[in-house]
Every structure is written in structure tokens, then in C-alpha cells.
Length: 611
Ligand SMILES: Nc1ncnc2c1ncn2[C@@H]1O[C@H](COP(=O)(O)OP(=O)(O)OP(=O)(O)O)[C@@H](O)[C@H]1O
Ligand SMILES: [Mg+2]
Image 1 (cartoon, rainbow, N blue to C red):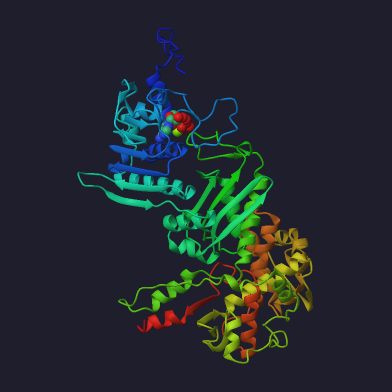
Image 2: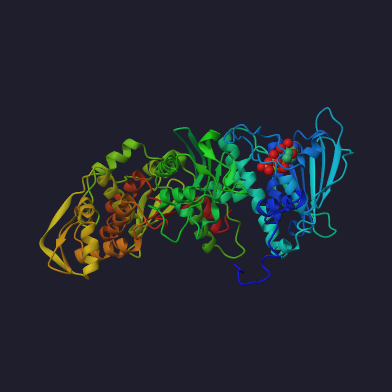
């Protein structure tokens, strides 16, 4: 580089062997990025040691103190110096890097921490005396006896005091503390049978408990639900569906929230591979794919998903902090996630999130009103697969035209409302809201949103059978377009034909619409075509053909929906309610908004201060 420098011969760099302290500090640079990464390493070690209870304390965002105590199997006095030696581990023998059953395997974390902070390890293994070892800036002190019941205490003080440059990159105490809480919560999600307690001991105070999750017991799904409720909140647990599916050696478990419980960013997406928290594009992409059909682009699903597999099927040794993994066959994992989640969402039928009604109640309530306690779980009202089929086959041409009749028995008296989760229609307000009485409350339906969803689900069912009936226009509608729009539409014309929309080129820069999907009824062909075009333009080319087709279907469904502002007869309203009950996903519209809100009598009574 500096070949013009006349002194080049004098200062030719020499190759040197670095000493251990420097080697460890370099390794620490990768493994220990911030206090939270130290906490992660120490808690993972505790879990690997079979701990049932882990107590974690930190001060000043973890910069001055991190302390992790566990009741695991501990270490003998002879093992202590080894634990601090680089590449010394009890977890693998080095013969097979693909047979990893523990969080740790590199034998790197403790020596790295010992090189960038003051580290004290006190430990006691069963049948041995307790012992302590200290290491500061890479200097290891002799092992000394120490009193301890069982397990291990690791204390790390003054992190990065040997690497001031790294210290400068630390964020505020509050930000570092938040990162520590996040790390502990993630690990706590993966280990529901272990107790986690986290204290902030900054200053001279006794310390403040910032998180606590007591060990769950019982069956896995109950334990998982209990733990997720503790970490992510009751609302998540109440609105989440269990997921349990297997394919080709991969087992997917966890909970995924209803689309109406979506978030404005991806903050509530947690993925684990063999209990290891990972941030993996493939997995997040699969999660998004599974919900693509139910959520507007700006909304993000909430889920905690656990993938279990033989260690040979996944390489965890691809990232210094082990937060990324590489699957031997990513396609299987993606397919498993997408199909399992879609199945779980379909099973949930027309359920909408409890938060919807909760939020509505909150809005109604006087400021000092009674506390909200709301529950809308109705596992028993899932439609059977047979019922779904029947619903699709016996459909009427659509609510847009003739009043619905014959298909559904009108509800004769209140006793029958008990058999119908969405109740009996009692009134229509503002030409868009149907009020129905249920066995123990009332339901308010947004008729436009609900109908849009029903039309969409019908179209999708027909599409699956390759049988979307079309109706020919008496006079083809000619739509003028730009040349690029024309070619974009024509490129997709085969797919559009499968969807019931038949178009062809009409000179340069125009398209003739010849047939439209019958389910949409009388529709404005021009507006429909422009909407489809918008959808195609929005999507870019990244999505799969199937995704694109479904998105186009969803747009088309809008055109066939009863617009708000149309009066409906009692029969029509009841028919709509019955079809919602029989249709999967009818609890939210195509944009993830709810299609109905339910208020229980008890809630109504609370609104009036009767309870
Ligand atoms: N809390 C603990 N209880 C019992 N043994 C422990 C504990 N922490 C560490 N050890 C022992 O010390 C060894 C070294 O720990 P260290 O974290 O440095 O490496 P590792 O966990 O084996 O691998 P990695 O660097 O991937 O974390 C471990 O293999 C384990 O035998
Ligand atoms: Mg470790």
C-alpha cells in the first residue's frame, strides 16, 4: 500500500504469536458483545448444568456486576481451572460437531469473560468440597476452598475494563438492562420447567426484582402456555393457538396468536431450534408466509415456535453467538411451519381476538369504571371439516343480489340461539352493523368486513377445486391502460382466468374484460381490473405465484362484498351469521381487522356498574 514510502524495508511487519490473554480478548470480541451476551452465556451454562432454579443479578446495566447462581451439578475443584482454559469443555468430545445437545460446546465463554472482566467462579459438585477461582484480565488465581451448598455462582465485575474501546460502545444502563431482560425472557420461554429470577441490584439498595418466572409443571403444552403467559402476557396466551406438527424428523410446537392479535412490528416473534433462541430469516419468513393471507402488510403476527430435531439436521456452529442456524433441508422446515400454522388458524374458525372486545369495552367504560376481565374462549364451537364443505357447496349466489333463503333455517326462538355461537340477528344499525343476541351476551358484526371474508373464503375453496364459476359480460368492458400495465396484466392472464377473470389484449394499451367471477355478482369490471393491477404492482416479484394469486383473490373479494349502507332482511342477516360460523378465518377480514366483537352479559353488566 505504501510502496512510495522509502523506509519500507525498515518497518516490514513481523509475524508474532499472540499470547493467551490477547487471544481470549479477541474471541471475547465476538462472543461478548455487551452485558446481555455475558448473561446469555452464563445462563446457558447453568441450563446445561441441569439447573432447576437460576438467580440472576446485575448492576448498572450489567456493566459493573453480573451474577448468576444455579443449583445445577456444579464443578469439582480440579475442574475449575479447566473451565477457564480455552477450548476446554465437558459438552462435546470433538469427534462429531453435529451431535450437539447442549447450549454450549466451544469451551470459549468463560475464558473470554475472564479476559475482559473480573470473573469469580464458586462451585460445588456432589460429593466434593466447594471451591473458588478468580481470573482478572486473563490472570488466573489458585483454586481456594469456599463454602457453598450446591451448584455454581459466577460473578463478573467491571466488564470490558480491559478493553476501553468496547466500553465506549455500551449504551445507557437502561438500554443494557433492557437487553438483559430480553435475553433472560427468551431463555425462560424455552425452559418452562426452570425457575428464573432476575434482580437489578444497582446502587446500595436491596435490589429490585425485574422478572420472575416460577417453574411450571405438568404436561408440556400447559407448561409452555403458562410460561408464555408469564413472559408475553396473559393476552398473548389467551389469544394464542397451540401448534403441534411433525414432518420428516422435525417437530414443531408452540403457540401462534390469532391474526386479530397482530402487532405493528415484529416484536412478538420468537423462534427456537432445539430450545436455542435464534433469529433466523428463514423461520421469520415462513411465519410471515403462513399469515400472509390474514394480515395487512403493515401488521405482524405474534408467535413463539419451537422446532425440535435431531442435532444432525441442523448446524448450530455458524454464528459466534449461536443465534443463527443452518438447516440441512430448509424447505422442509419452511413447509412445516406454513402448513402447521395455516392448519391451526383454520381450526380456530371464526374466533376473533379477545383484545378486540376488550379494547371496545375499555372505550365504553367510564374512567373510574370496574376493572376489565374478559374471556372469549369457545373451543367447542369449531366447525367440523364436514360442516365446512357443506357450507361451501350449498352456497347462494351471494348476498349482493337476491335475499338468501332455503339454505339456513331462520331462528325461531331464543332457545335456539344457544346452538349458534354468533346468536340470532336482532337489528341492523347504520346500515352496516348487525346486532345479534347470543346465549350469554351479544355480538356486533361489521357486515361489510364479514362478507368480504366469506366471499374470499368461498373463492379460495373454489380455487382449490379449480372451479371458480364465471359469468360472461354482455358487452366486453374495454379498459385503457399504459403499455406496461397491459403487459403486466396479460402476463398473469392464465392465473386470472383460473380466478374467474377472463381478459385479453385489445389493441395496444388496452384490455378487454370478457368474464368475471360469478360470486362477485354485478361488479364494476373496470374498477376490479384496476385493483388487481394495483395488487400485482404492490407485490413485486418476490412472492410465490400462490401468494400472489391469494392476494389478488383477496382484492377481488372486496368487490363482491355487501357495501356498508345496504339494508338486510332478518333472514339475510341470520344467513350471514350462520355462514360465518361455518367458515374458517371468518373472525377477521382480509386485512386482519375483526369482523365481529362479542360482549358477554357479564361485561355489559359491568359497564353499568351492576357487578
Ligand atoms: N454453571 C455451571 N455449572 C457447571 N459447570 C459449568 C458451569 N459453567 C461452566 N461449566 C463448565 O465449564 C466449562 C466451560 O464453560 P464455557 O461456557 O466456557 O464453555 P462451554 O459451555 O463448554 O462452551 P461455549 O463456549 O460454547 O459456551 C463447561 O463445559 C462446563 O463443564
Ligand atoms: Mg458455555
